[in-house]
Length: 318
Length: 60
Image: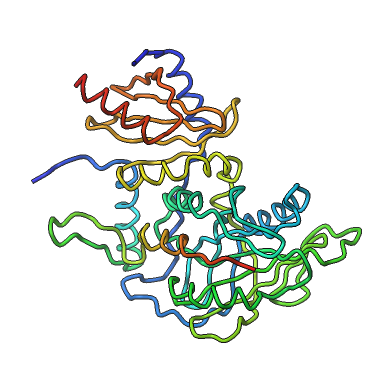
């Protein structure tokens, strides 16, 4: 089973290490003590990083140009919930396997769950902040149906309150519309697209407009968007592995062959590991042992089954 | 008693926690059974996050 392609694999590892998008830990908030539990008051604003703002406008525009562009779409928002504001740091898209029409959207939560594990390697404080979804027409406010669902869902969130964005494409693109503007504190517009922001707290009878502001920062999940359909395809099996193998780590990497997701599962000996590289059209398995990277001639597209077969093989040889 | 080296993630989390404790008075959590490091007070568990993700309602 093991065919050591040491030279090739080691070169591959070196190339890969240069191109890995290594998550960097977020700096702790200055002057804030976490030893005292945060007392969550009503949200007074939502702060988006410029990376998140770009993702929402760019992907909404891309969505409208696709075959399913008439359907609703959306993103789950991941970030930090502070006492009076929410900071959005990552977007998890609805996915190609979403259930959607012109009148509804239900996200593919399997891929979003795995993505949350990957993004939260950067900072374990990251939590679900809210949801953005689009309306094909000009309804710039969440619907009554949204209120019924969100009113119950916000009980799951810190502060029992969520941030909700509505995307519409009912604006008029004007020449020279080079940057976003805010006609009202809770509204952002760019090239005919509009996002209107609201907050909803448990027990509220209606959403309330929520001022939105921008700060400089990343969309921590953006590198995953390039491989989102691959993530969706493998999500259930990766999630199963995560629950069974708590030490598993992820890296999003890009090289001349494109973007892929690298799973690393430590073995008993320090430094040794099983690695799985998942790309859109292939799943490759590697063993890192005593500083050598061995490619395994083992082509199982079901990631969890492939990993356990490999572990069983290694155990038999130990 | 079990001694083992921390992996990269655990080491980074522990250093961040110690820095947060020294600079910002951030609490460090300890497992009462074996005194192992359990993170800092404002960390969120995977279970809490994934529960929220799995329960997102349909939007209209």
